[in-house]
Length: 347
Image (cartoon, rainbow, N blue to C red):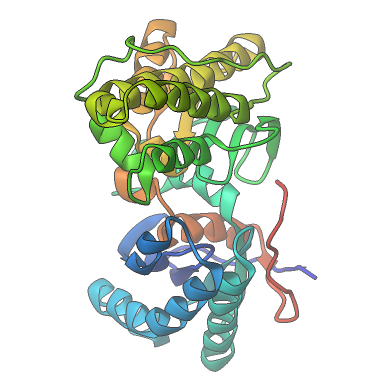
């Protein structure tokens, strides 16, 4: 149960913890500004071609204390100066969430300061409100945001820091999932999305064509594209076993073009019909160079105010959890020590 309490927010230092998947991250922040943002990656999953939940939770247990110590040291802040502890309650891998949740609760109790929970997907969107300095520009409301990650693809309308409305989402695979699965089909190592982006810069985006789904309203579908890509490669490999190796850059460029087109067509359809003037992208796939360029070019053509996150705030990180918790804290919300992590948690 969430308890509300009016607070003063003149100058507040706080610590945020992110452990929803395979990155252990801790950030120390002052109001909307980041003092440190430390991330420990888990390379152990590469040999398995994807995240292994049990291994992820074990690695979080190893990493979370030293990562916290480094974050505090880099920020130049003693834990006695902290006003609250923020953490990711969900959605994500349950075992990984439990590690972060348990550590956050223990730290909160030990320091006798409030515990503030954050929603992982809200945090991705609110990363745009992190300030590098007091004069940093942040979005105005209403804001329409395309959130694209390995597990989620959503179009979210924000009317305030706490008023979120999902107006479109994937009905099957997420865009990031489509990138990673296509990479696996081509024999690229995990994680495949960044490798496809790198290879795409060397290829011809119009060399190959793949099917585009026809889905109602603002929703997405990527399972058909993945199947189309698989069947196309199977057919070509029967004729030439070296087809993928010979055409890898063009395959990546063509696939990326189609995925970006699907995302942009739906997003800007929503922009036109809703009449919003402020637009943003967020999530791990927002680091994709093809998506960033297409998003920004289209926004400029339409005369929109566009916001693209810094690369350090695209993938999972604790600073985005911190900024999300900051607005919850200002709103007087308090987390409960009896609250359990949520593997699934809708906006």
